[in-house]
Length: 505
Image 1 (cartoon, helix red, strand yellow):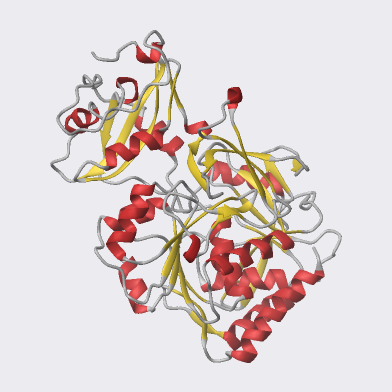
Image 2: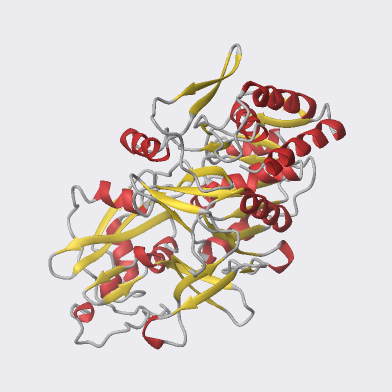
C-alpha cells in the first residue's frame, strides 16, 4: 500500500483537529460521538497498535459489519498504519457466503475495539492476502445480480470518487450528513466516508434505514445532506408528507430511479434530489450538479470517464448496453474461490441499459439481466412497475420473470399498498395500458418489500422466495380501451410471434 495514502489520511485528521478541535466530527444514533481532537487521538492510537506495514505486501484487516463510531476509528486507524481494509457485511450475507469470501481473500486479521483498546484477532491461514499492488480497500458486491464478488480499490480511485461526490453534492466543511445505509457498500463509502475525510463534513451514522425514525433523525441532528436509493425514497413518500427544513438536498443512486418517482418526490418535499449513476467496479459514471440536473436523467459522464451505448442488431435508436472505460475503475475483481482478475484497457459492460438524450445526458432503462423474455417478447420490469405504481393506493411494485413451460417466462409482480388495493383490480387497470404479453400472470401482495443492508431490493432473491409456492394465475385481461385511457405500448413483434399469441383474449 502506498504510504502516500497513509499520510493523506493523517493530514486530513490533523487538519480537522487543528481547525475544529472541539466541534463534533462523527456520531452514531446510539449516542457515541467524537470531536475533531478526540477523533485524531483515537485513530492515531489504533495506528500505533498495529504492526508497521510492509509497503510491498500490506496487511488486510476485516472491519466490524455494523455502522458505528468505533468502526470509523478502526477503519481510519488501519489506513493511517498503511494497511488495507476489508468490508464484508456478515449481518446481510449468508454465513456460508461470508466464510467462502474470507477463504478467498485471506485477510490478515479481524479488528475490533475492546475495553482495553483496539485489538487484532489473526486468522489461521497459511498465506496472507493476495491483493493487486496499490490496494487500500476491498469490498464485496451485494450479490443482487448473482454471487457476491470481491472488488479491489486503489487510493486514487477512492479519492477521485469521493471528490466527485463532494463536488456534485456541494458538500461543505462541518456540514451535518446522515448515512443510514451500511458503510460496507462502496456508494456509501464514496458518498459519506470520503467527503467526511477529505472535506471535513460532520458524519452521523444510523444502524440502518428506518422509515418510522428517519424524519426524527434528520430533525434532531439538523442534517443537511443524506444519500438515498430509490426504494428508500418510495417508502418515505408513503409515510412522510414533509421532511425537516434543515435538509438542503439528498442524493439517489445504486438503482434506476423512475422519473415518476423523482417528480413525485420533488413535488412532495420541495427538496432537490440529485441522481447519480455508478457501480462498485467503476465508481461514479454519470452525475449532475443541482443546477444542471434533469428529472429522468442520471446526468453527464464524469470527466475522464468514457460512456457509450452499444445497440444490438445495428439499431440506431432506443436503449442499448452501457459500456464504460474509466481510469478510476477498480484494480481487480475476484469471484469466490477464483483468481484475481485485473482490469483491462477495454470498455466494461455494465449490464445496464440506457440511451443518451439530445443534451448528452444519460437515461437508464433497467438491467439487461433483469429482462423478461416471454416467448420472444423482451419485457423491461421497470416499464411494468411504473404502470402498477400509478394506481392510487399502490406504494411499491417489483416485477420479475417466472418460469413457464409454454413461453419460457411470464411476468410476476409483488406489490405493497392500501388494504383496498387487490391484484384483480391492478390486472384490470393494466389491461388498457399494457399489451397482454406484458401483463403480470402471478401477483403477490406483501406487507413490505424487503431491503438489503445497502438499501437496494434484490429482485433475484425476492423472486426465489416468492416462486417457491406460486399463487393462482390471473390471465391477461382483454386490451379494451376505456374512454380517455392511454393506448397500450405497441408490441415490437408481429401478431404471429409467440409473445403476441394471446393478445386480445
